[in-house]
Image 1: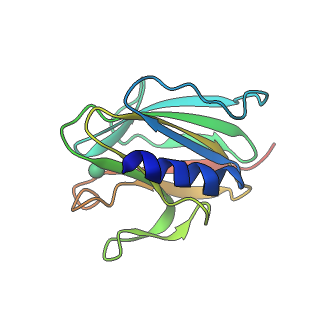
Image 2 (image 1 turned 135 degrees about the vertical axis):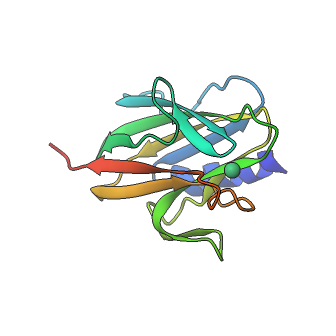
Length: 152
Ligand SMILES: [Cu+2]
């Protein structure tokens, strides 16, 4: 089920430059091999926070418009977690009213699962957010700022 969802993501999202691969083991990404990754962010999704490697829980993450960012996502917890990217949180509908990319909804990770999310950061500088709207996770604090710096 999750895999089928992931494949749909790949079909839908590759068009606009975001590629997701979900797997139970370390991932090899088959597309975009010719592209240079500008930044890799290893991110843990757990109860109830995002934590980039070497940073504090829910510490803001900074990226730059136009860059190709590779998120390596891991869920070591016993709960399902997900990652939406957007702003204007809408907990009633469990999404952001403004998505960073309209073609991208979210990545879902089962307990113990990993995924890679390759994002061509759009030219939308400013303050965005990563959030998990599964059950009450967002209200429990599972969100973190994503700062998009303008192109230099
Ligand atoms: Cu969650």
